[in-house]
Length: 68
Image (cartoon, rainbow, N blue to C red; front, top):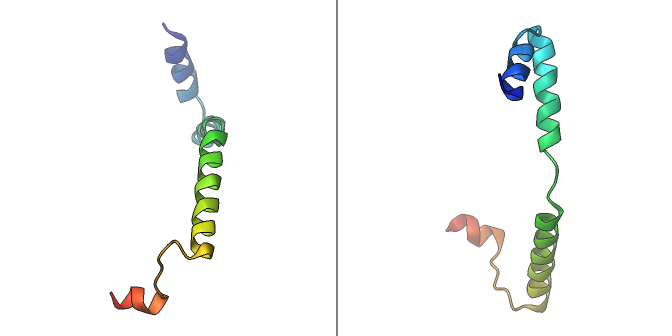
């Protein structure tokens, strides 16, 4: 039996609430921010703000947007 199968077999023996805590712990271990993506987005946001502030990024008012 593979390790993952053994782990699943043992996990299924847990009470429902214990399984929920186990799943939440596993999920948190996968939910690690990717700093390279965060860096790319930070750069993109900065470039958009600079473009808006310099007037090179066209914009419309909220009322005009809603009217469309």
